Image (cartoon, rainbow, N blue to C red):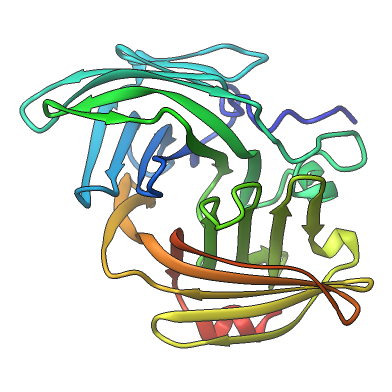
Length: 322
């Protein structure tokens, strides 16, 4: 058994089907965000292996999916350093240089003071011991709950300044996305030390399925982690077409999350049998409020109006299988 490194590329010797993508969310001082998702896809049904880059501009609500020849996908073996054509991605730096008929974007952004989910032999990232199970359909990694940004991007001639902005990085890899999931991420609370990542997903397991969850709240002094392998339990869930509320407990800690969809979304691409297809409606202007209790004592209470949010698939099944 070896220590997993969630940030590195895992697909070198993986048979098809396989996908891998790194999610970089970068927020300006005003809370508006740009999302960059570099990655690759390998089909098992047709001869299709491709690299890609998704660009989601939450300021203009524009989205671009760039399909790129797999020969232009270059990576380092033991660290996250990725090159796709003239673009570079890592944990501490991103550099873009794209010019085609649909979009022109160039610039460089530096990331500092990253706050990753702790990674050790017992808990190799946010999946815990589940990360050691090769039969999992989809693996998840939280590479930085929150970090500082410096630099700028020029998109179609307009400069976007990320100095004193906030960043978040996660990734997914495996055979396919879950059938159903809820996910939200926020790091533009009134308390600038707070950041939240919360996901529930349908996990196929042998001939059955269950709902797994990974929830983290990062504060100035502590990372509060809630997951099944940490003896946490979701005690209540309520949802509608545009709202999702959950309460999770671990020992004497209780975290309540109220999330409401924003007004605008773009449809991101996700792996399918033959190719990446438009599937995931993601909002970057959602409202999220949180309250963390220790027993009856309220440790913190806050809200964010520029959160990322996804509700994909059948929420009834997702909640029923908790």
